[in-house]
Amino acid sequence: MRLYREKSLLLIVDLQTRLLPVIDGKQQVITEAGWLAQVAERLDVPVWVTEQSPEKLGETAPTLLQPLTEYRRWQKQHFNAMEDTAFSQALSASAKQQIVICGTEAHICVLQTALGLLEAGYQVYWLSEATASRRREEATLARERACHQGAVSVSADMVAYEWLRQCDTDLFKEAHQQFLKPRSARTLTFF
Image 1 (tube, one colour):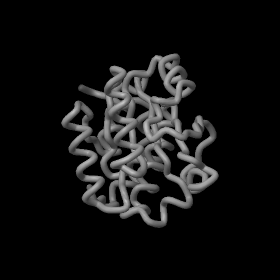
Image 2 (tube, helix red, strand yellow):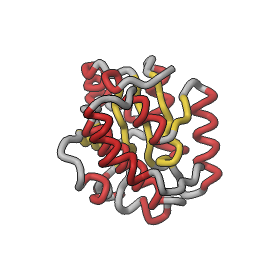
Image 3 (cartoon, rainbow, N blue to C red):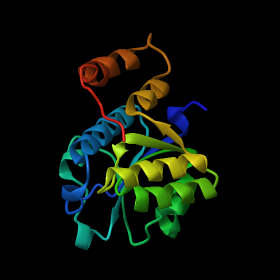
Image 4 (tube, rainbow, N blue to C red):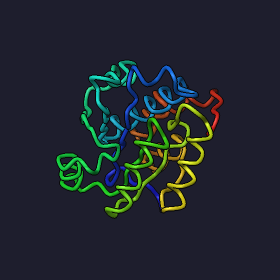
């Protein structure tokens, strides 16, 4: 099933300052999540970030949020953000059905939130190169489990091009110059 920006929301789970130092591939995770967040913002796709116990794990990485002008921040205690009533009610009210999810740790908060979203009937897209854990094997198992339950593994490029849909618009030309062309020379590693 294709992604549509009108139906999508980007959910970045727990990319927090005190957790990131121990995350395998943390720089790629921040780079990819930040890049797609900027694309999402430019295409009017809502960007939400969660923070698990920020008093202990710190706030969302500043380098991720600095380029953004609009995002919604959720503080949570549940590993599954959908168990937070305010979060799940706000998501329902948003009428977004396609949730692109990424973050840390893949096998804990990202997985449990993805499973909660699937249980609630949302379409979940697992942003593979922006989802990680302390151990790479944990991230791989989490993606496999989420996909076995109905999530779809995607890359940031897949998402961006599906949101853009066509190449003959001013929006595509602007996004191509600002986001896509500079990215094309980079090499990515998938978990």
